[in-house]
Image (cartoon, rainbow, N blue to C red; front, side, top):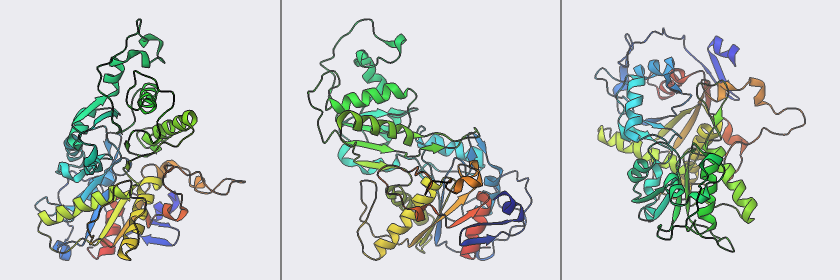
Length: 419
């Protein structure tokens, strides 16, 4: 792959694209590129862009230089985006407007909060749980995020631990000196898993206590109820890419731990009322709606018919985009929806396709090219997707592979006749 990148030729299987000569770097801002001619590109777009963030636009808190170059092509002389753009991330431990501000500073472009789709954003659609007493797990501004999603009554893991200190027994220094029972604590009616927590052992223990006690963690039940309380979860990424050379554990790893513990203790499978974040179809439906609303606000009358999803993670970005493309094809044929993530949308869609573009600046580039081939004696690579998503090798094949996000934007413009 490195050799191909040096030649300016990158491809994925049958998909091969020869890049034009790389333009000079050294971009200082996010205004239109000097000497870049828009030509007919100012017409109403018929396509939209879905950008992953980590590994595509940034690594940790550092912007990837190619992202600045890419966004110089995406704005006009007035600094406005020439096409509808959303940022679809599986992160969820930050407020939407704070993420938009962070992206604005890193990309040197104005990013509006409604352009940022966090992993849990589609939870706004689960109205039937918004008035229930929900236990929330994760880190960062948990209560603020939950309330922004519409949940009116939330209890954090820390609040539950303080109410029932005898439940948290792993850390010897935090074990209570005296035991007490709370009879006035409100019953928990559901669980929100918004992202990986800091103290996994405490969160796993207390979530299990809530599920096994049917929402009354200070008591015990002879038999665990099944079906259990409703569980909504976001971000299924097993791994994610930061500054480290190797990928880090993601919330998908935490979910795997919880599912394994629940099955081992009860003999039953943990069930989700909703799974959000890439690769869930629900997340792409939500992003499609945001793209459509953005185009309407800009006065672009032509319907958005094609989406391009640019990411670095084959399991979440490529699989999700291809799964959504498959869903769109089935919907166009009037066939039944599948794997939507627990909440189905009935509004007819003008979107006809979703192409996946894989960049080599994140998760994908962290792997040796040889790791893409199963080792001797093994028939296939390990499946890093969530348990509830069936493994289909074809869905892991990107429509296109390019070196970075700048080349991805060049590719899209070439495909759409914009450059």
